[in-house]
Length: 359
Image (cartoon, one colour):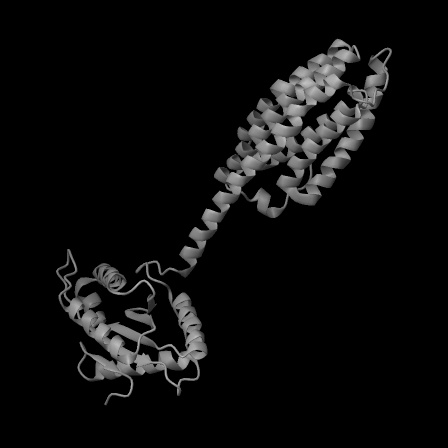
C-alpha cells in the first residue's frame, strides 16, 4: 500500500468512516456487475472449480469484507487504501484467469484504475497499475500451474460482449453519481466556511476585514461611476460602564441586540460590520450625506428605545457620518473621516449624529 499523504492519514474518525462508506457502493456494484462477464469466460473456457470459487468470492463477498475490515479497524483510512490495492491485485489476477480476454481485462483494469484515480490521483493510479501488472505475472504462473489445457483467448465472444455491457455502463455512472453528491457537499461546506471566515462570532455581523474590503470595492465603483457613497461609524456610549456594572455577559448581549437592530434597519445593499469592540461600521452605497444623516438619526432614536433583556439595560449610540467626495483619494481616508466625525459626536456629549466637517 502507498504511504498516504498527511492529510489522508490525519482524517478524524467521522471523515475516515465517510471515506470508507463512500467507496463501499461502487465496490459492491462493480464487483457484482463484473461477475457475469467473468462467469461467461470461465464457462466458455471450462475453468476448474477453484476459479469459480474465486469469482463468487470476488463478485459477492469481497466488497462486504473490505468494508468490514476498514470500518472496524483502528485506522479506517489506511485499511481502505489497502482495500484499493487489493482491488488492483484482483483486477490483475483476473487477466490471466480470464484467458487474457481483451475486452473483459481492459474493463476490469479500467474500473479499478478509475477508483484509484478518484481517490488518490496519479500517484495511487500508477501504484495500483504497477500492482496489477505484478499480479498479472503471478496470476499467469498460478493459472498455468493448476489449469490443464489452459489456452489464451483474446477475442471476446458475442455472449461476453452482452455480459460485460452492464458493467461498462452502470459502474461509471454510479461513480459519477457518488462523486457528484460529494462535490455538492464540498461546495456547501465551502460556502459555509466562507461565511464563517467573514462573520464576527459575537455580533454575527461582517467582521472588520470583510467590511473594509466591501468599503474598498464600493469606493472603486464610486471612483469609476461617480455614484455617491457614505459611511457611518457607530459607537456604544459608555459601554465600559455597562460591562463594569452588569458584567461582560450583559455587555455581549447589548452588542448582539444592537447588531440585530442595525441589520434590520438597513437596505439589502448596505453592509454592516463590527469594526472592533463596541464600534460598528455601516457602508451605504448610492447614498449622499443627507440620506446618510437621516438614517443615522433614525438609528440613534431606535437605539434609545431598545431594551436589552433580561438585564433591562438601555443604551445610546454616537454616530459619525462621511461622504466620499473629490478630496477623498483613498477608501481609508473616507473611513478616517467618518471616525473623526464619530469622535466629534462623542466630544459633543454623545447620543448625537455628526457629519465630517461639522464644528
